Image (cartoon, rainbow, N blue to C red; front, side):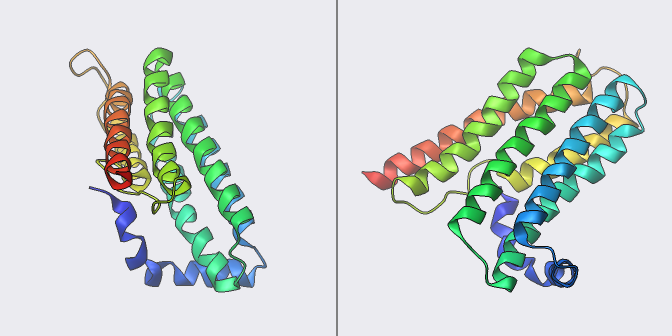
Length: 203
C-alpha cells in the first residue's frame, strides 16, 4: 500500500496546475514553500478543531490534501521549467519533513496528547528518513512499505472529515487520538520495513 507509486500516473491531471504556476512566474521552490504554508495552516486548523469548533477539522482536511497535491506539483513544475537541481530537491525534502512534524504536532496539540504525538511524529520522520537513507548508501530512494507519505496525508485528510462527523470517544479515544496511535504504530513498522529492505539489498 503506497499512493507514492501512483505519482507517474497523475501527471496528466496536474499539468493544468503546472502550466498555471508557470504562467504566474512561480518556480518549484516557491511551490514547495506554499505547500509548507498549507501544512502550517492544517496544523492550526486541527488545533482549532479540537479546541474551538469541529468545523475546523474540515478546513484541516482541505489544507493537508493541498499540501500533498502541491508536493506533487513542485517536482513536475521543476521538470517543466528545466530547473531540476539537487538544491531544489533538498529544499523540497526539508520542507516536507518540517510539514510532517508541524501537522502531527497540531494534531497532538488538539488532543493535548503530547506523548502520543511524540510517538507518532518519530514514526513519521523515521519512515521518511529510511526512504532517503537507502539512497544515501547507494540504493534507489525507497517509497514503499505499509504507508508512504501520500498514503499518510490521504488518511489524515479522511480522519479530518471523520473527526467532524464523529465526535465522542471510541474505545476511550477520539477519532483524532486514534489517528495518532495509527501514525505511531504504522510509522515505525514502515520504517523497520524499509530498513529491512535496504539491509537485504546491501547484502
